[in-house]
Image 1: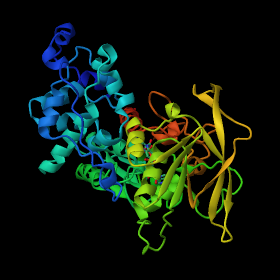
Image 2: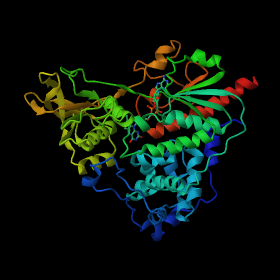
Image 3: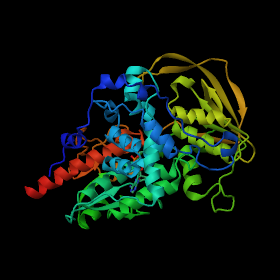
Image 4: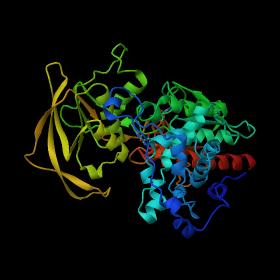
Length: 494
Ligand SMILES: Cc1cc2nc3c(=O)[nH]c(=O)nc-3n(C[C@H](O)[C@H](O)[C@H](O)COP(=O)(O)OP(=O)(O)OC[C@H]3O[C@@H](n4cnc5c(N)ncnc54)[C@H](O)[C@@H]3O)c2cc1C
């Protein structure tokens, strides 16, 4: 069977399309207001790692599902990188058939409970919702409904395991167990391949486990979705660094015929300003990984992290927001975001910024660090910052921050978390000289097929995009699986 994009699109074609104008006149639906999800109160949630959003009840989910207009051309689907059949799963929720809704999600998404929590729906499917596009009304809460259906299925104890084709005996290796690798693994297992995921760390999940904190995405939820992959026959090798523990050639000798690299962008970036090497200044990657995976918030562990009382996090992305909110939960009296642009340019999800503000995070925008100072033990104790103003737009289209002369001032800090971006993980590219990479270290792939300059190696997620989103990584995993399947079958039949 040849799996093409057209085939995947055809899969979601439905016969229930109806006249949109008639639906717009349907005030029973368009007159309903969006149901909002409950949250744990800010003063309560900062005392622990409890999940902030509490999910929808079945009644709330069914009420929200009623708003979906069943558009003849469901633009929301085109906003989803894995092309979930959104109206179909929502209509099942409306009828109260939630397990059916969950099974629609699983047709195209290996991680619905994860995506329902962390996807930037406001920029993707919900941004393409008819309510938002044409009526300037709040879009259907697609993300909240996705989370509801996935949680309902998990809590019902009836987790369906997707059907897998009869084994074809062809071994494929996945390097990295983030969302790109897991999605690829699930799709290849469905097609009957013998899939092994190799992961450098001792936990499976990539950023879902080591980056995103429990209060946004509990690890137990990621584990349940990984368990489904195990039941589909996917094998996992932890503490296995491809390029160190074994080379690609070693794996070829073991019979692996196809490789998918989803090794992410876990290499932290620093600003290279004076004093950045002082004790107490660390990357968000190290800060979050040690806390999330190594229990470093516990003072009794071998490698505890000193919980700062005055913590500055440099940056304005999701990683910065996760770091600063973590610092607050570890007992910081003052937890600050220091960001060189204004609130409007901040790349973090709107929801994360709102939650951070509610939790008492200070936002020092149009401010940039220029030097750090330390006490006699070498631990950071102050930082010099400079005010900025916005100039002309730069290559990213955002207005360039320009330093304001004479505006420098000092802030007392005891911990600084630098969260100014990441670079691609260099190990796979550096261990394969014949692999074509860009000057930024990302792997060059054919845009459609995601095939690299080494024909049997495909790649996707942050190692190709250089830092993007969970759902884009998943979309890559899905496309790469379809392409590798075609490549291996053609090779076999040649
Ligand atoms: C703190 C944080 C918060 C984020 N929040 C959001 C959010 O709310 N929403 C969103 O959509 N996106 C978010 N992102 C971005 C998102 O998590 C990433 O875009 C996504 O995880 C990329 O997936 P991936 O599979 O490409 O790589 P990763 O998730 O980075 O996984 C790569 C894996 O490969 C492993 N690996 C690397 N090299 C090797 C090797 N040689 N051998 C074996 N294993 C190897 C790594 O250990 C890692 O586990 C966030 C990122 C961070 C850091």
